[in-house]
Image (tube, rainbow, N blue to C red; front, side, top):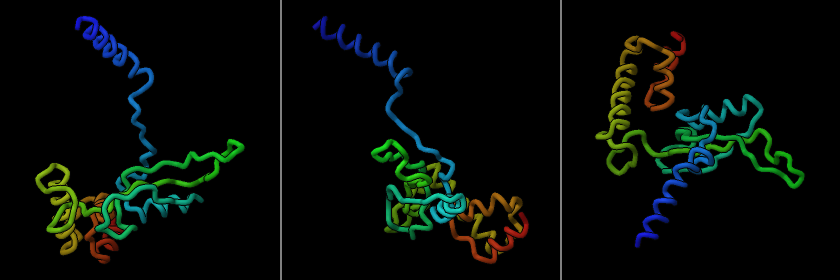
Length: 163
């Protein structure tokens, strides 16, 4: 029993020493497009001569262009000569659920911090649709319109003219 405890303690100490050196195995892609809609992110990639490719999708409640990018990274696939096989290709992970859950619609619960924030922003967007001049930071408001949806075309046009 004592040797089992010593071996277990030794493994724990070794792991705690080696984790900072080798990492924990979690990898993160380039997240410069995270939080944008797929339409906006893919347009940015295309304008730089790249090719957007959907890597993974969670949910199915939204049109693909309205899905939120949760992660994005350049393809690192190599051909047989060791050169990039997909130069300029970006792989996107998408979340196609609603921002806030509703009856029969998956999404963040309004009881969570994320859901409560989204619900508050959606309420603001409804106010901007009635009176766009209530938005005090048009650039931020446009970003929220893109991220959370719900802005009328007239509201977006007004905000774009103000920023």
